[in-house]
Length: 463
Image 1 (cartoon, one colour):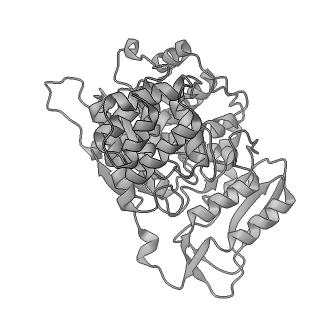
Image 2: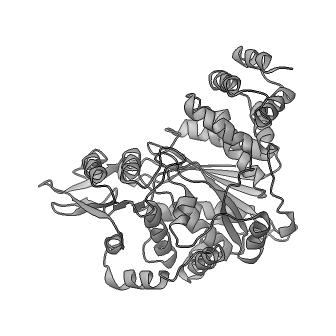
Image 3: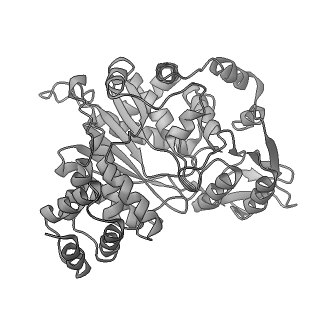
């Protein structure tokens, strides 16, 4: 068996055997298959594709290329949630504490942002003192004692994926369903959770631009999960507009805390949070602890539990417990939330009081004719966020954790001349000026309310 024959076989559109796929992954892990040979096979896969069995084998080979977390000693059904990336997607910061407060253990490894999509670890890094570097022992201890953990992916978690991802990024082979699915699922399976809920984004601010490609990606990942004997559900959600009112690391943490406090809850964000929490709950051992019982809760009953957990303050307390258990200093939380509760009348004016050591620019609607905001293009807002310093182009780039955007008006809102549309934060004057110019391209207006404004965020749920 040699790599040249494997490349030629896939170039001809033939199916690779399990042994050939494992040989390839072992070769790149142990450096006897060179990067130019790996790049050639990646291009062949990108052009000729892989069937479900090949994709599963590739995923498992990547999973076994490094360490695998063993969470069996937790003694409970452990749930994980993964998002394929979006603009303003702070759902993990909300969903995790809600589920932990409902006594559903959540074990999550997250990544840092790259390009226009933000990373959960970057958001958590904006909490003073928070550490995402968690040992295997502490990872398990935190799930047992706190009910949740969110850690950075370890260096030896699916190392073959890191190698292939770097090659894909520079060889125009990123947009391949088998390669995307195996990359995501190899890390999810290596991190040890029993059940996985996938939030697959589609739209201008997502990698998958349409419903059909998002659904196919979801089906591939669900198939991988089932073959690996993991419970797996996918929620396909809309990412044609930013999620929530904020885009940026510390801004999104603040919005998540205000959501958990019940003060500010963007309707689209709330619908997605509830949908994901329902699916996570239904995969857990809380859904029906007695396997012989027929007393399964309905979705409406689970939603009521979720809302009660938030309204009672239990979810916010769990967020505080989680952050402090990983070294975070949340001493500012109570004053921040209470100040927001007392000082601001509208749902998004609270962000105007954010303490930011940098430049602030406010953008106003200046047309003489009142209008409704019909659309805010998520991809454009994501590029603005990157320009302001809230994201990184290369993995080694530094980011400004306080930079970002507040959407003071969102899709469906009526605006008149002088109304505040958005607030931009950055430490770079030139970037701020460029972002202001870019902002005008993100908005589409309408004289009347259109069906487009009321489109739901949940597109489809696949099991």
